[in-house]
Image (cartoon, rainbow, N blue to C red; front, side, top):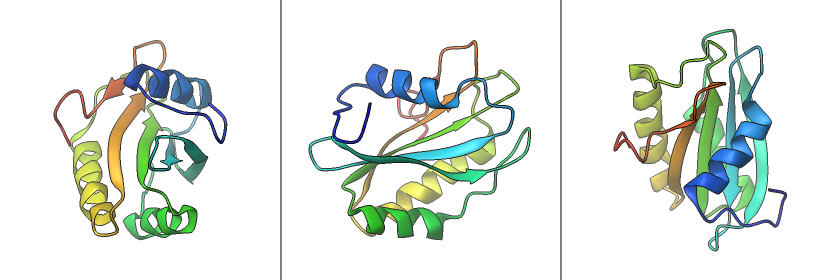
Length: 129
């Protein structure tokens, strides 16, 4: 997916994010900003961490949402360990970002965890958002 391309299904989003995040040595937190019709405005790596964690600052995520005038966002990060299981911290962060972004009318569509070779985990599909 490039800027201007549509991400209309969870599988399209997963495949797009796998291409960007699979095989990285350090944890990275990405956002894919979308307009009201689910067209990609921008995909960007906001935070880079260590082998097993990344500090994510909700204020910066909100600032980027406003910068892009986004209507929605897909959140994603990778687990270099190879386990796609969300941690308690991942779930808590997702809920914090959902709350923060809802204040400016930006919908969080999903938070996807990429961990090769496993199939990416969708927190939305698991009901963790």
